Length: 265
Image (cartoon, rainbow, N blue to C red; front, side):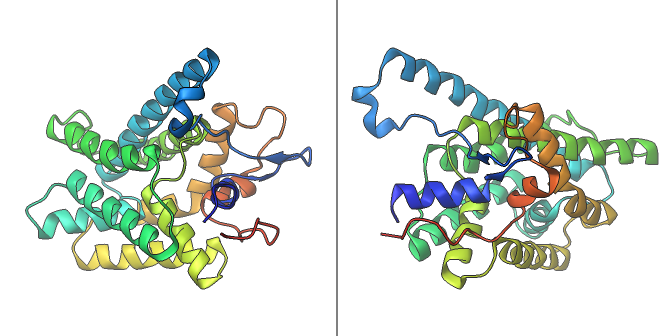
């Protein structure tokens, strides 16, 4: 796959589209490390800022995932699956997240040639490690009273939305599960919305069978993550001149990859 093809698909998948003004919104791309010898001082500064944004976004993402797990109303889809794995094996939920990430990266690479970038690898490792750190120290305790449960559930969505905005603004590419979704879409020719629905439904069912933390919160998260990401994009400043509407922010959750994409090489 050519860099332009992947960049196009990722931009469509991760929030690309037309805003209210009709202009096309494409997430920024961090300067490539492959060209580091030719970087200017401005490139070094820009890369450093975007790398910090990446780390902040991923840390917030880990917090959001743990909030969904500890809200005691049901975790989000992939967390149900990973929690189920951790309950049936000696590994932690963070390690399960990392292993699932590695598998997603490998399958995406082998099936569609989507090579992992720096952001993909850091995503795979850091979120899982920080989830375990938060849970080990009980920095976010399991919710008891229902008002706290509800607050944590909606807090999880808010944090995940902002985290996604920061992560995408950093411009380091798709995460492991996003890459896998793109790979399935390329191989099947189906809309990303359909492949995402199929993948996440499958992992939730497997997670339930494994004893993962499923509940009403899982369903609410599936319904509201699109609008939450739309708000997160605006908070991250990704919609200043090309406002991303909530339904278009759901390109994270999936729209058809455009038919005008550059041909794959």
